[in-house]
Image (cartoon, rainbow, N blue to C red; front, side, top):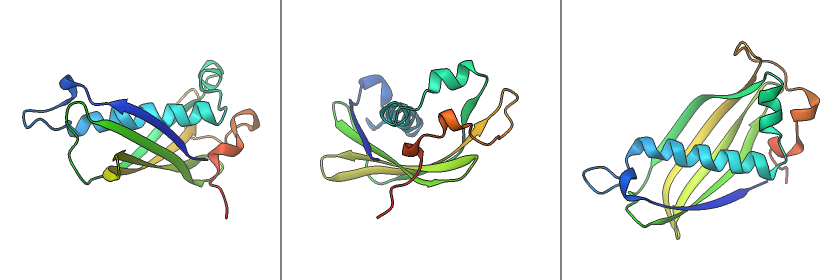
Length: 133
């Protein structure tokens, strides 16, 4: 499953050089991951209400080109790896054909105490698993 979402760079997201501040890419990626979860019918609010969470354990970002005000960015997200407790989502941020940034985000399913736990069946949706060719 690949999810695509689009956003436009806003003025307040840019630094004194006129580029999107590196920290704002984390917000872009978070937005896109939530859209991916919604597309795969993962009941995130239900998991939270039941006392679970999906924590980000690691983010690796390679910045390739700067983005600037009014750039229209397309963020593509897809699962690369999945285990019984955690997984990896790959994300690309593009402006047209140009790759702006690429990220790998490692996540873990946790209980109410923040401890990793096996994903209960109602939240272990097929979309979390990478597609096989």
